[in-house]
Length: 441
Image 1: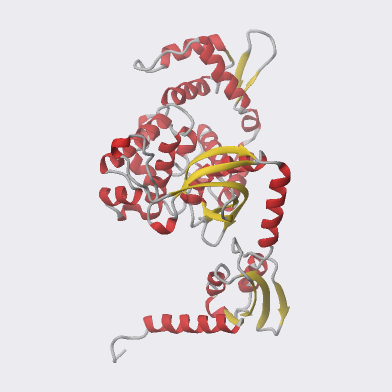
Image 2: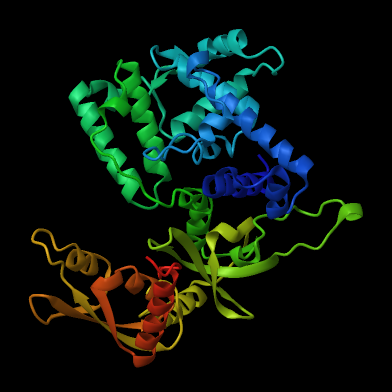
């Protein structure tokens, strides 16, 4: 797919994941900054991609787009947020061709010529038949990414699927591996690779006649599944950081309410977009667990340090390479500025002190455990059996404030005094919402 098309479908899926059926077709189109006609075309493209990915399954196991978008409390991998990763870099003919090759190599060892004959027999009639050079190119690609291997070095080369690890595991070992990957994929970031491995293991279990959903030992979820879509940009940014390259992109601030802007390729229909073209040297990527957001931190020659929510990045292009000494100097200055950033703030450092109250009941002290796990470089001082003090110096209070607020009555802000007054005013306002409106209540 074209890069622009992938940007649009990322934003489309994010809106579906977060808003569900809250918007009409026109409202979706307005939010995306496209026409209703383009919206309908995007839906058709997604259905076609999903159909391509499901085309090797029996009819009863196939999935409609509506099934993929249906919300499941416990399921976060299939297939809403991941099937774009399987299809984003492949043309439809490539997707079908690679699927047929992998299917043929699951059970038998075959040569390139034998695989070409299989493609001749099984490719849909309205698709071009691949020549030997194309088949060998596909096999080279699949071998490079590690999903197939050569059985020996004698010509003609013979290939098989790289399933040795999964095939040599017992049923119990395969279930244990699935449980382990399932936990890590749902709790670690970045997570797309873990979800893809989880999906592969799930298919392996089904081939053995086991239903992974019926045997799952863990029931939990992560609230921000839409973070997975932002990982589409993650490895592009990591590559640019490693190669010391600048990046240019169109940035649509999430605060503006627009999620996408089409490229103006026809001057007759050119219109001004609400996004801004940016050119920055990427220095760091930060993930905010509190809100499930990815941030790109970079340096602009005109504006200095700049921060971007990754969900607003579209039309990313690599730029010029900068000297290593320039990159190191910019990174050093950024690390100095962000030395006490709760997430990404670079404001004036402020000392924050709070008193946390331990739970009254016996058992696990979830308040203390959470402060120890999430409190970063803050220090804890024992005060009494009922409470403890927590102190930290951070760049501004705007990012730590929601974290403190989330403890409710288990947290009392002590310093700075003006922050304490803000919390008192906020809780008084919240109290008013719960006051009875009838005198007899």
